[in-house]
Image (cartoon, rainbow, N blue to C red; front, side):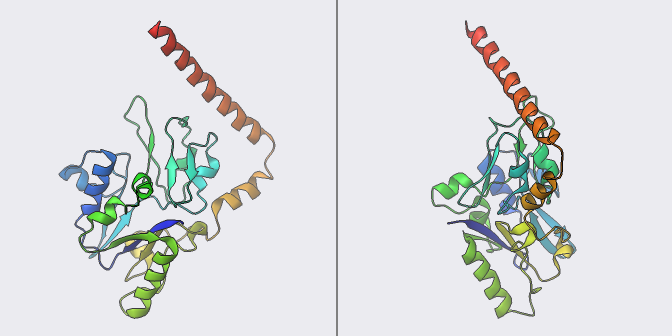
Length: 247
């Protein structure tokens, strides 16, 4: 059973409780300076944006067929059956292909650290495994963020649009964008007015990627293997050095 988030921009009051809860869940710092930052980053995995008198949230869309996972040569990113796209830092080779592939420009890199990692929201995967809702959902005081089974969230969004047709722009963002996502938006205005990208393809990007790669010479595959080999050798040397140091 895949889960998803439904974000209702018409209910959001911009309190940023979701930001604080997200930071606490990840063990990241959060203060007035970070709260004032209006974009996601390696230390801020969700951000409340202000667009005039309306609010919106940025976070990883956890796509149904994630482009980030499809381009990762070492399998550091994986789509789970629960919905989240999870990241294994121990596998990551730091190529940052995921950052280039993401149509929503979400993955962020810890540029200021000696041993950097990529960071992004994973829909609180560990909490989901325990049967809990996401930290941002739990923290929202007005119900602007809801969490549940994906089809149920779609049904809830459609219900709200039908019950209050004059209050909502009559579309749901995330059902077809890039083949579908695990985060849905509903809004009083067209989505570009709350900062969402509306020029993304409606087709799952991995399908497009593989069709393009079929036309690319075998050097692409060779390059991927080579990069994987370099990553393994580098890590193997570090492992040997650690063992020798202990002796």
